[in-house]
Amino acid sequence: MTVTPEFTGTHLWDRLCWAKENLEGVQSDYRVVYEDSVDECAKILVPDPNWMACALQGGILPPVEVYWELAKDEAQPDFKKHTRGYLLHETPPVGPMTEEEAIEYLIMKDCPQSVWKSWDEGNRPKMVICKKEQLPATREWRNAWRISDDLDLAA
Amino acid sequence: MAFGTLKADTLTHSTAGSLTTDYVVKGSAKVWSYFEDQSVTTSFNVSSGTDTSAGVFDLTFTNAFSTDDWSGQYTHEDHVNYISASGRATNTLKTVSKNSSNTTVDATDGNVVVHGDLA
Image (cartoon, rainbow over all chains, first blue to last red; front, side, top):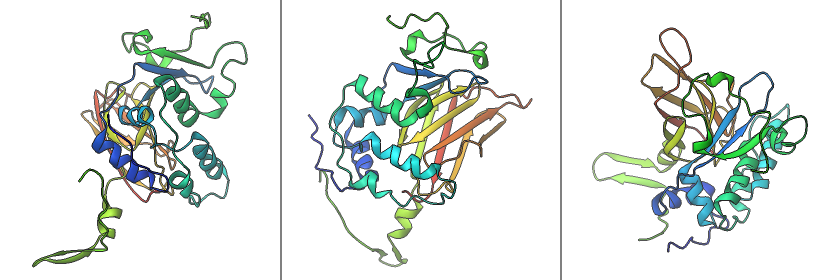
């Protein structure tokens, strides 16, 4: 079993280099389908295999809250440049996750907060986690794909 | 060596001269990705891909850039392919693929490389 070195204080880039060298990519079957605009079709988020390997391994990725802090900075109207990038590198990394926990982390990192913070509010869900094989088998009418209105969320 | 550190500010060739290691660090690609059929096959510094619509595929980075002034290239086999200015941020990019009729089409395989300064 590969043991993660003590990476606290190590630049995130260097940690990713170590992971690329030492970990096999993990292709997840999970997909996150979400809608962030009524005028646009559903989007499908696919985890990156190298990132998933880092998440499962533990000790590499920063806490997701770090990304929220950087997103807050970037949302400022006078934003020019990140000045708190050190948060990525100096915040102690998170431990190993299950694949399901990794998907939750990824949703909170890469999906718009307006989607995942209120995914089940309103008349219909704005986000669904599914398996790859549950997506349409062909790309026909891709730009009209929406989350089904009669989705059984308990399934 | 399993995991070691070599610290050097200058690399010197026996006859061709020297360069500072800054050239290596700043000149390396900070993100690269090869994706097929709306899914990332292999990459570096990418956390996810998002199939946004036909012919549009976004990538999100694990280690963001310090600004959104990074320089990126995107290629695939169709007629027109580019990184959209509208999807540009320190931690994400949007690739767009079109055919010769200027219609967006799914890229069967896409190649992305990005250079810039990390946050």
